[in-house]
Length: 96
Image (cartoon, rainbow, N blue to C red):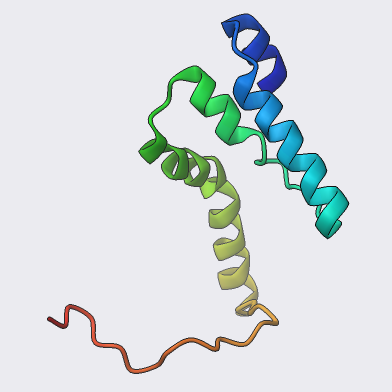
């Protein structure tokens, strides 16, 4: 979709940049992007302001997040990630 949008808009710059980053990530780190990798080039080509990228990303996931929450409540089980938090503790909210 990102490529086709770039073709239609007459500007493949952002799609080509994404393709290059994709190949670099695969070659140097063995990383494979998730489904949202090309979202930035697509949104940018569509003229969507940068500050809306994250809200659009979140809106697209609200149904899935809600389903997880409902499943957790129904099964009386909270699913915890396997990672351990290693950041700071005891931070004060709103501290000057």
